[in-house]
Length: 326
Image 1 (spheres, helix red, strand yellow):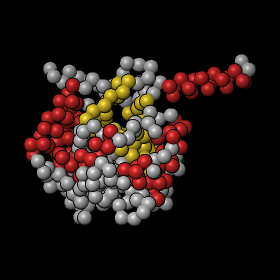
Image 2 (cartoon, helix red, strand yellow; image 1 turned 60 degrees about the horizontal axis):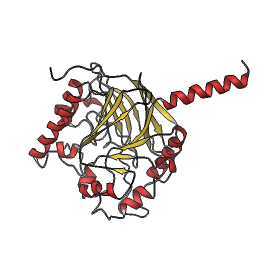
Image 3 (tube, helix red, strand yellow; image 1 turned 90 degrees about the vertical axis):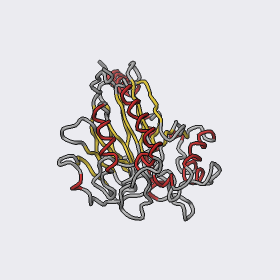
Image 4 (cartoon, helix red, strand yellow; image 1 turned 180 degrees about the horizontal axis):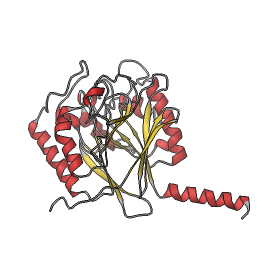
């Protein structure tokens, strides 16, 4: 076979592989700066550029944003200029004009979180239908599904303003929290997805500044294990992490370096022994994010710095489905 034919065959193979997977970006804690023009940070600007370049190269289909969308006090109303200044004017690459899916962080709840939901009617790419919701996609070339479940960890556990390193002290409304817990368990129990990802703002496990969230360790972690969730993704701590308990199949990813970077590892002794597999926070590398490739046989989670450099990569595998209702 001529070399030109071999090259064409290789290109066709690469194209087919790319066509038969979902590809999406994940970032957290990306919400700029409230006090000073231009209402963003150098880290956020750098991350937006890196995301745009990678999204163009890979043809990513959507982006997931894990809360703290607007520092420090969220937004006031749906007409707040921060939507333009911190989101629309920053993530400007054509490749990022795909759907974005949001959840709220503690800083969003210090403002008007309902206004962020309402902004979904103002922007074609801003998708925030409710404080907690689920969305599914079919993996190309198959009938298998990826299901994403985004929860509101502030409603579940309570709010913190980060003025001190404290655990959330409990939900403002026990009734609202229990309604969400019931919805979440029902959603996980009924899922037949090939891969099931749960996302929220607070971490279950983290070795960094905020550390594990007791409320989520006590109540969310058992649900993730019982219903064979593939991964839990979150922000809140301003770095990139991968954690996995040695006896569990659930992967935990902290992806919170969108606008701030923090190297604090003060809670490294508060996670299960052997569970911390990767940690990154480099003040000189301009923030970070993740890209996820979802194919039928495996799902790859790759941590990236703002320059598009791969920092870490791991593979996850399809769920072992059980009849949870039996």
